[in-house]
Image (tube, rainbow, N blue to C red; front, top):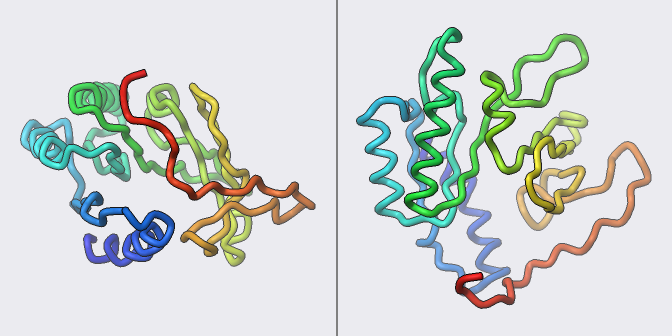
Length: 195
């Protein structure tokens, strides 16, 4: 629900303003549809396009993915292929980066596959794929695994709840761990323009 999202995002905006005082809180827009958006339906696809066109965002965060279209298991692959086509078209035409949330399938026994549930398209399509799995539910530590990377990026191996941000990098809770590289919170020092 929108009220829950706003309550969780407010401390992040507050911290962001301390790190970057020039941060404009109006640069963040939240649109919540708890019932989901079926982008395979023309009316919902047009609604999503209108929201993105009006906001002109640099980044769109959406999900969970299973609430972005409806298809039974027999049509899951075809539905997933159509969804990626629609989202790729929007990304190309409207020029935004896309972060999608998805969920892992239920596991059997002690092991749970940390991959997106459903179509294998979700494994092949993204530029980056990260999974977060709890190390200890009570300790608030998650293991971060990158299962897809088409470019080099640094991601911490573990995150813990709390610290300067809601989640912060931490050492391996089950090993000695190496010192983490310092986190540079200064604004990027580069000129805008073409490359």
